[in-house]
Amino acid sequence: MTEYGSFPGARPRRLRTTPAMRRMVAETRLHPADLILPAFVREGIGEPVEIGSMPGVVQHTRDTLKKAAVEALEAGVSGIMLFGVPDDAKKDALGTAGTDPDGILQVALRDVRAEVGDDLIVMSDLCLDEFTDHGHCGVLDAEGRVDNDATLERYAEMAQVQADAGAHVVGPSGMMDGQVGVIRDALDTIGKEDVSILAYTAKYSSAFYGPFREAVGSSLTGDRKTYQQDPANVRESLRELALDLEEGADMVMVKPAGPYLDILAKVAEAVDVPVAAYQISGEYAMVEAAAQRGWIERDRAILETLLGIKRAGANMILTYWATEVARGL
Ligand code: PBG
Image (tube, rainbow, N blue to C red):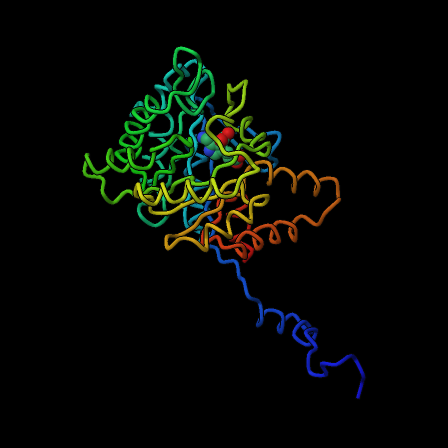
């Protein structure tokens, strides 16, 4: 008998010997239903427009968005999160295009719902930044600061037009205080009690949103540090979490995902509602860029990032790779 220390029975490598053995003992598995596809739809384009910093991701036309939704559904993805990109000429200080029933996001919600019905969960980003000419997530006061309560009024209206357009789920991502409660009231007032709220509960002010700003043609010049969270903080997320749940959040989200797995794990442990994580544009771009240079194995790296996010406690993962990965699982 071989001598290998004082615990003769303990040889963890036995359970790593073959692919079948490793498969059997795997503690975490990815399933297509874990995945949600974020997608961009841009007003007034005849062909999809590539996003340079997100190779493989495009700004969709209304038509190609419908196709992307059907492909996601066929691959087994659970949901699609829509972001609207209006004509630059339609951006204004209040983000009016975001509450126009004929605004690009509302039109796209109706398009996609007509295509997928209730088979794919149709979600909408509920935020003003794509629609404001200053690029902030809310409206500004006389001093140019983001005005929390004036913004809440805009979010209430936005929730109603998105629900009317067919959103199953709205995703408030602006990090205004009280947004979940105001949106819940606004939805209930118009009889949309069944529309759920996926609250961006812990949303950090992150450099990794960079490529997204290109994806939505953002007009932002400053930063979002007065409303998004400081990457240094943990307890603050638990406070945000408690408030969102009190206000009626049906599901909560942590964003970004990869650099915030500790937050995700704590949130997942603390709640009894579904937990989502958003693997954001910069996380996507890093892997694609390194893979393009041949520095990492793309497919393995992608699965590893997603597995890490699931292992940390996410029930749902928003990822730009959703359809591709779901097909391969
Ligand atoms: C706000 C919003 C942002 C993202 C999702 N919703 C941008 C921001 O907060 O600056 C980022 C998503 C990504 O980077 O993939 N509407």
